[in-house]
Image (cartoon, rainbow, N blue to C red; front, side, top):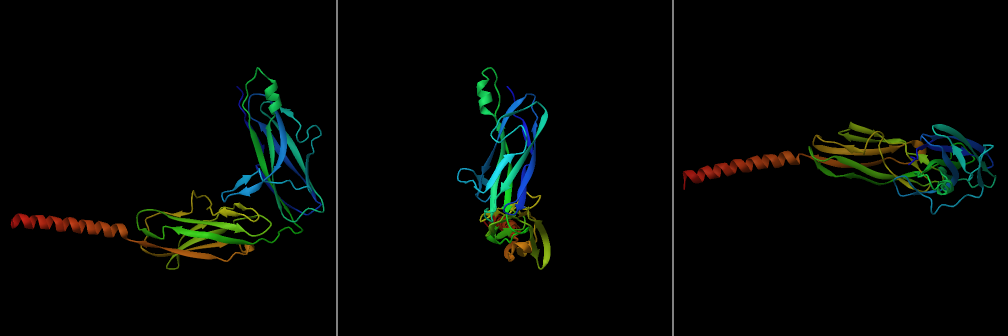
Length: 285
């Protein structure tokens, strides 16, 4: 049994180019396995799906004004080639646009996969199969930094009222792209109490693709959360995006109350009153 152990670099490329301009992107393909492998290539368009960065290949349509080919003299897209064990192959992708290309985004994946025909023709060899890809985000624009416009939606805090000790405050929301070009979620979330900053989160620079939404996530954090203990009071939460995104700041708030200490004191008071009542009954049966 041969393991499929292939890698590709870079994992993603992003370009802004004018209509009619051509470019090249070099990919390094590494065969990390102990066996020679027969590979093939293809380019597939995709569209964003959901708010978590997922992609959809089934409903995407090729842009007829963008053409892809390989600059390698001995390899073409859709043509099998072999890669020796523990070796590297550089594939140079040529991207050609014509002057009629619409000013908007185009999303593709450059795939490298194991050639199925070579596997099926070898009856005496059992081999794992696989497929790897590198995303290609192409912005066709007449300017280097096309205008984008965003909005913050479904911005919320959970829970709105919390105890000083138990449960975390979780910040949720999406950033919506109202333009034809993708952008990154540069910005920050600030939590304050009495105008004093309690904590700041840098937003993770995720791509928000054209006319789509992406969940807010925080850099180097598993979630945008504020953990207890917290002092009682009124807290304000503000999200501010990069000015280039043309998005007004958005605020919300939550309250922290000493719920568990009050319940604990009531419990202690109840126990004391109960003990006194029992003693009183024993003294006066």
